[in-house]
Length: 55
Image (tube, rainbow, N blue to C red; front, side):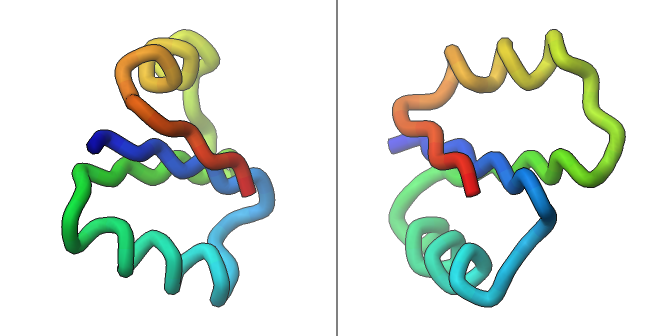
């Protein structure tokens, strides 16, 4: 499964733990919104992944 994590305020201890566990059996991508990112690429990623989790 392809899982996209969108971090609104950067990584936290909980988000890092869950991402580490999920990345063992899944393709995981992390988007940190505290860093500059284009709106178009975020929208593209949302539609490419099976599951999107926003923190």
